[in-house]
Length: 117
Image (tube, rainbow, N blue to C red; front, side, top):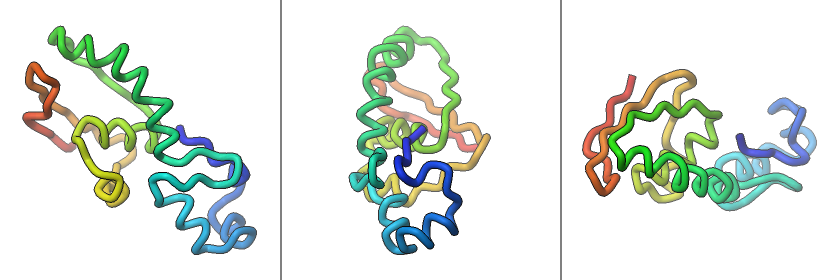
């Protein structure tokens, strides 16, 4: 999951009281602006994608079915990569907790079908 730095352990109301609601919204919903001592979504992607590319993509190319279970921001980073979304597009995407997304890929790992459950 994304590391929220100085925001760790605070609920949304406490965070807004301490830093201001607009600033918290910027940290939570921007792609490349991190909270103090924390990670942005861009940082999370930089941490998650090397593993995906080294360990998961070869298995997909070999025709294996893969199940990925992860926290929301890690999934957000993967979805952005898999679907070739822009930072603006991924920030608008709602990712439901516990709701499977099934991707079908061609041999180049381009998405040919998406099933949302």
